[in-house]
Image (cartoon, rainbow, N blue to C red; front, side, top):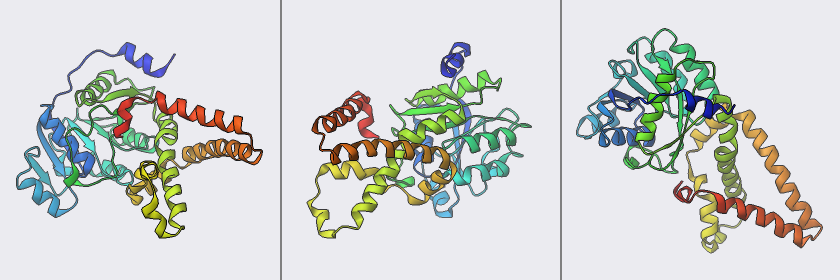
Length: 305
């Protein structure tokens, strides 16, 4: 039976409102999440841990959505019934060790990382004694970053994965987390961590690396060509403007699935190359029509992703 349907048939409805939400990391995703949670009355209080002193000072000086910013993650999570790790993926696992002794016994811990298997395995092991960990991946990123670009509407109309392990008996917590994301306007899909990593390797990570590869290739051409490009090139390479450090960490954590996606893509590219060599106009047209059909079937809301 389909895993998502199986979970959906078992779950009752629980509220998505929390007494205190603690956000670990005040970048684009974390700050946007805090703003949205306060705006939609999903959190009584929002506490934040921020690594940089100037960010903490800015938040404590008058950010309407942040009740208090802390210098230590262990202090920020005290009293929270929902904790969301919003740092880059390479730091999320480190945070688990920092906070596990300071959380409430009934705390629900999640994250926003775009790779799930390693994070979920470590999270489950870290919070066996206190709290419950369930992975999340709200697909609400942008080529922009930082607190200054925060937007409480960032999550609206976007997809979100919630990734419990199939053998866990935590139905109530799964539903509460699902409802939290849905209350932010997201479309939630329940899947296992490993299935998540396979899916996003194809629909998220592969597109980014292809856009970066195209931009890398064109960077070797004369710079005078830059002013001659049209909107198509800008649209195709937009996501290549993303943070290289963050995407390097994603590549490290999801290396196997990204390599699989690249291998499969190379097969498609091979077909196109063969059609061009053989001057098979009909085959080229069918290749392009297949791509056109796929593009047209994507939901219109993807235009803003």
